[in-house]
Figure 1 (spheres, one colour):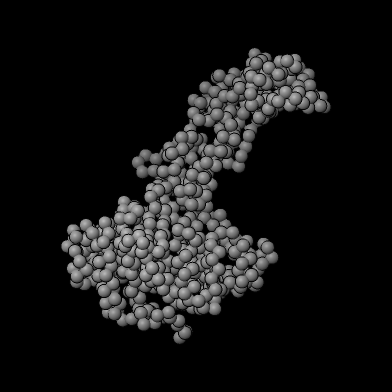
Figure 2: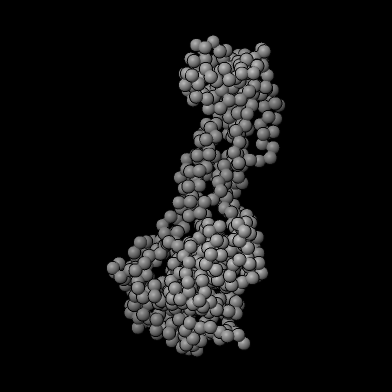
Length: 143
Length: 437
């Protein structure tokens, strides 16, 4: 199933990332995975949190430019070649990845990755057929 | 006493009374031309001028209402054209404040007269026919390129029409052809100096001796810096496209501000608030009347430039009064590396882009010797979908839209909504951090 990723526009200003993290932290929202896409003049923070509805409400109330995107989180064998095996599979089935990043934590001996696909539904079908475990929102909340 | 070169000694050193006689004759002729235009016919009739003979003295000029850039915008494209299009030899144009350009027509005599004024200007600086002249001003609609080009050819110089930009090629060309004179904005010349040596070409490999610097205001300190760094003489130049372009006023070998060629231009200084004429020596807005242009007569044009005229003569013996450096503007026009930019042009473009909010800021500073223009906009939250590529594309689109309008590429910064200062009442949209010196 799809999970929610929150994107936050960050202008190039000191302390802006801190502002986001501190706002979420003080409201007991936990960041599970995080990455920043940066350009020379601005950045986009991408996060997966335990309480995404509450997080986006909080961010918007505090004048952050934030939106949500569907992503898929999958388990990848945490050993050499683990990621490569999954990527090979996706490539063979013409599934395009826009970007991906890792989770901070994991709940089994496998690594957790967030993937943003060009076509999320098609990607999910392919993953299901190959018996690759797709992490649910519930599992993320419970991490 | 140094040897003073002249292009037309008789005119350049004419008695005051003779200059005024020429001015009155030519002004009457110009009134005849102006009466043929939609722009001036009604205005002149309203103040009782129905034929050139209604102008009895030079003082009668003050009866005529001022002409503004806005008038030329309203009369676009041909409301101020006094001849049949078949007679027009060339068109020049400058960017308008709101997208409608200011267009100037020249018939054969007009180009010829303008060229002659530039030949006169060039010779007044001591440049000669054996000089190699590299014209670093932009060609095209902008008058700085072709104006000096024709003048230099008339003097008989070797002209290199290289145009603006491409610093490496400018330096290589200066070396290859042993350029002795350049026409350039002061900031670009300093930029060129800062790049000397990068490709193994040093000042000692060049033969430069003079620079005509214009198209942007600069201080005496900047001139000194240019002269000291490059071991050359630098001469200030003044002009604006509405009055032909360069060659309205130019410095002579004395380098003590610029002689206005008064047989071609009638210069007045007015108080921009009361519109009253001011005495020589007092600072105010420069108002110019062109008395040698048939296709586009221009009567009492408000230049928006603040300056003063010297009451006394000049050591060179020329009797044409000198104009000070431009001390400021009466409007909000910005000059970015020699290009005139109105904040309203930027605003107009920004407001057409749905992905940005209505608050914006225009920031100008110096990066090395060159001006840097940064336009800061706030993104519109509802159109943020979290994709970096879309934001980059938006930034790129804003740059391209602005470049199409103002001809230079600004840096564009995207900001969060509410992060740019909000003003109650008149917004301060332009932050100019360029040092005054």
